Length: 282
Image (cartoon, rainbow, N blue to C red; front, side, top):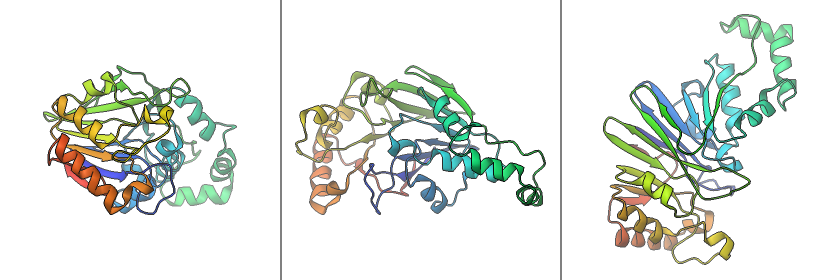
């Protein structure tokens, strides 16, 4: 498995970090976990094209995890890619129809691109055939406990604690070639995600709170700091641990120094803070 970090940030507008997005390459499959704002641009910067993505899995539908969804699907469609396989909690089908349905927000664009003679000829000149269909992602709505068998890999979903009951939230484990990768999604510490992380070779866990930072109690209950994440990961046998979802104020040299110190003390040196476009072999 090869991991490319396409977004390691939060909803905050920030040149250093796009919002959440993680690309796993396994054999001929390219699996994108979340597609927040800026992930599309980092996909291009990483040397891939939209049509290269074969599977997309959403942890939840906060905007910083799905803002670039429509852009990815539309661009891949315009490149003539086969329909993208998309998975996520409800209401994924309604969200997709809201973009690409006959009355969706993109219906004027899609009508123009498929019905106007000049646009049809551009499509034909690029190798397409008429009539040109609209984008039609293959949508599967999933819940905790869902398992997907890919070509040489398996994905398992577990319940995360983050924005219920308005949003259903998940974390994912992907296993291939005897290795296990875990992406926590956005979550407080909970047994479901801890069990998902058990014996992981590589875990990415969200970290929305700096070392020792105090937030409002309603927020802090769902936002473990680096030491708490490290303690959980160490207790379940994670081998490599990296933090993601860093906010702007956490990216100071002092913030990094404190977070790294906590990771080293509670987990060990096989840990760190992710940056956009980092690449890891798992």
